Structure formats: structure tokens, C-alpha cells
Amino acid sequence: MINLLKKYRPTAHCALYHKNPVQLLVATILSAQCTDKRVNQVTKTLFKKYPSAAAFAKANLKELEKEIYSTGFFRSKAQNIKASCQKIQKDFKGQLPSSLEELLTLSGVGRKTANVILGTAFNISSGVVVDTHVKRLSNRLGFTHSKDPERIEKDLCNLLLKKDWIYFSHALILHGREVCKARVPRCSTCFLEELCPKKGVK
Image (cartoon, rainbow, N blue to C red; front, side, top):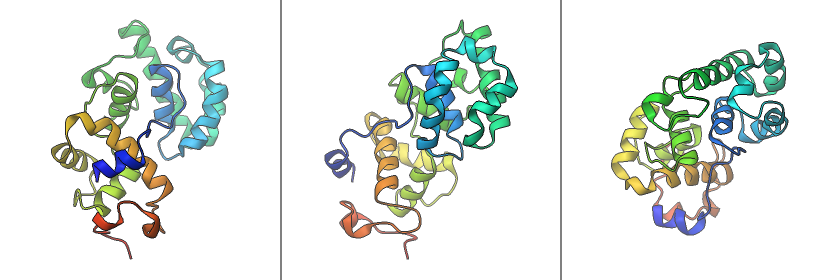
């Protein structure tokens, strides 16, 4: 399956628009319960207004909430973004840290967000990103029997070579968006069909 993914999705990458690690942090926080497409629409103007951690740290919370309103959960997201950037300014000299332990000290950052940042911004294989697509497809493809993201990540890390951890999540997310959809998967056009056990597919 990995070989087929690499053959048919060789350029799979993070779909969130960003120009630096701090922007990726903000975009990933905004992506919770929101589509990447919507996030990219919001950050197109957001990053012009707030180009750095310092700018987000000084942001007026109400104004920031208005800017990100359409991504949902805007109050908690605004608070997390501002608090994270304040900590980046205070404890990390304005630079986003590149270790899992330090990233997890930032507001609104869990393992998924930390893995996204480490893999995409720093090319560090710290784990496999488990979002809704990876969770769904990992079960359908028989890679795991769990619904718990941390358990799924452990199962995937045990199955995959570490060098494939970063690529795999990008490829599976792309495949989930375009082919293996939640309600009506397009099995007849899927290049993984012959190998897929189709667990949970009616």
C-alpha cells in the first residue's frame, strides 16, 4: 500500500498555507474542526495583519476573534494563538521550538499539532499525524482497530518505517479527501481497492 501511495500520490504534502513555522502553528490550531480550504482563505489576510509571533502576541483578542470567526471555536482558538505566541516570545526568543516536549507546552498544541509542525516545518519524524482522515482510513485499511488517536499513532508507527511517517499522513489525508470519503468512498476508482479490506464500508 505504501508503494502504491508513493506511485499515485508522490507529491503529497501539507495543504495548510504557511511561510514559516509560526504561521504553520497558527494554521494548524485554526484547522481543528475546520477544513484546510477555509483555513487557507482566512490566513491569506490574517498573516498579512499578523506576520510574526510578536504580532500575534500583541494582538487585540477581540480583533483576532473577528479575523478567525469563520473557522469556528474562534474564542478558544484566538486565546490559544495569542497565549502560544506570547510564550514563544517570552521563553523561546520569538522562534518556534523544534522539540516535541517544548511544543506541547504551548496553548492549544497536542500531539497531532506538534507532529504536523515537526514533520512539515522541521522535517523531523516525531510520529504520524492522526487527523479525521487518517483515523478513518487507518481503520478501513485494517492498519488499526482503535478509535483512539494516540493508539492509532502507535499502531501506525509500529507498521511503518520511520522515514515514511511524515509522507504517510500527508498521502492518507489527500487520499481521504479525494477518494476514500467518509460517507461514499469511491472504491471503484481507488488504486488500493484490491488490497483494501474495506472495514466498515457498507
